[in-house]
Length: 150
Image (cartoon, rainbow, N blue to C red; front, side):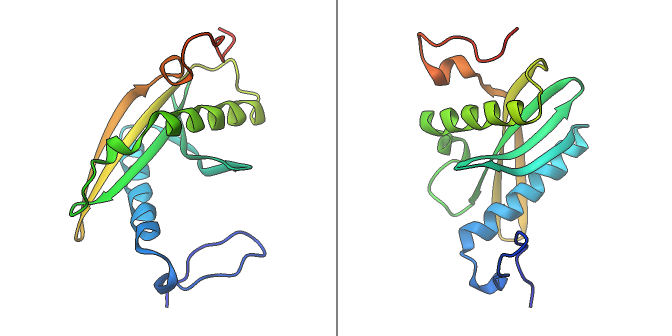
């Protein structure tokens, strides 16, 4: 029986007991990592967390730090993966990116926000990579100072 990977001290849960949407999400993130590596990006972090903030994938694209949100859906599902990236979700990703930059003392590096949309149809996966999918100014709204010092 395959078991899901857990953190130190966590109880391993049999994969058969994990919700289907969680398994689909894992498969989608694996597909996204493969696609990003094929495109020459270096994976720095996966599922990085600080408190309730999480980043799916953090990459380096030359000098730029790339924060990648992965949206995976079953082909039979009703919604488009890109539609799941609401304004509220973009704001959370930006806050998580700020926390990652602070934790890694990387404020001086240029950044961007990408999205990888993955559709799963049976055993077939299709993935699309959207560079510069959104920026911080549209998600933060008017009246906010730039969040990077350049």
